[in-house]
Amino acid sequence: MRRWFWVLGVLVVVGLGAAVYFLKPVNGPARDLTLVGDVERGNYLIRLGGCVACHTNNAAGTGFLAGGFGLETQFGTFVPPNITSDPTAGIGDWTLAQFSDAMSNGIGPDGHLYPVFPYENYTLMSDQEITDLYAALMATEPVSTPAVESQIPFPFNIRLAMAGWKNLFFSPARFVPEEGKSEAYNRGKYLAYGPAHCVACHSPRNLLGALDWSKALTGSPGGTGGKAPSLTRDALIAEGYDAATLAQTLMDGFTPVFDVLGGSMGEVIKDGTSQWTEADRAAIAEYLLAE
Image 1 (tube, rainbow, N blue to C red):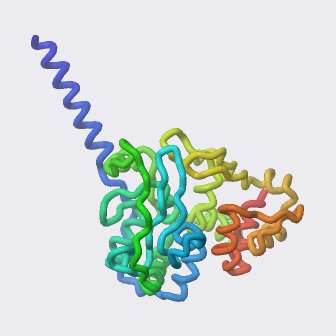
Image 2 (image 1 turned 180 degrees about the vertical axis):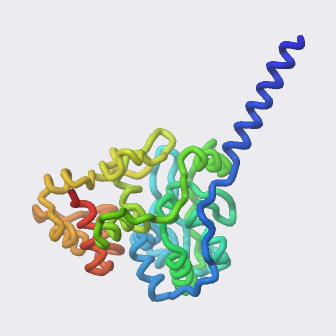
Image 3 (image 1 turned 30 degrees about the vertical axis):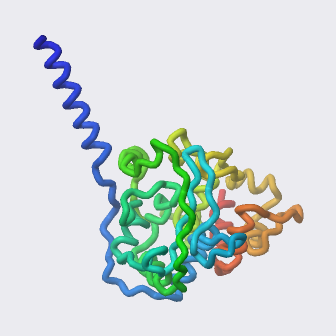
């Protein structure tokens, strides 16, 4: 009998230890939230970060940033929410601290956010960029209609489970440039891994929906990130790209073989990359095609 008490005690200790580990907070470096946001710079970040393509449903005519198309995954269908300045349907009642926590640590006012929202990438943004983006979103026209509800079946609808997911797969940090690389190269890498989050769509994921960072930008066969081609240097060259043509494709959507990129990438180009600066399109092309 005493032996069973020992076994039970060990199981309790192991269980409590696992709970402590999987439920502990996963937070990146503290941000300086005393900075003053600039709406104009923030409006550019809205385009740079793909906010429009994800959070605007042009077909339904719901309004700018008032909620996007449902993203179908093996864990359910996630609908990007209304992120206008409306205090009820949107995020107008969020404080800068709450917004920063969502972007940096994947925690919203209602709890843990699902990684379908690319906070793994946005966490790399600078403190000034977070403040600028917040200022721009608070300046948007409010839309009082909430986005349709996501359809997430049990047990994936348990947000607390995301605490465990983060402890396994999420390492919030800020972008660190590579030494010995050009400014344009590092800007391109920052965009691909940070706000533009190319890596989120163009990389494979494991069974729990976590990015396989060892195969970053090698393409996604489907699942959480959807099907997306490889963006490695060899794959791009095989498709006829060089840095100039890739930058041009990000502007007009035409490929080297005179095809036109449509679907979700077409939306990304129309609402995002076509409105980037020429320097940013050139930077990401330089990074992706670097030897």
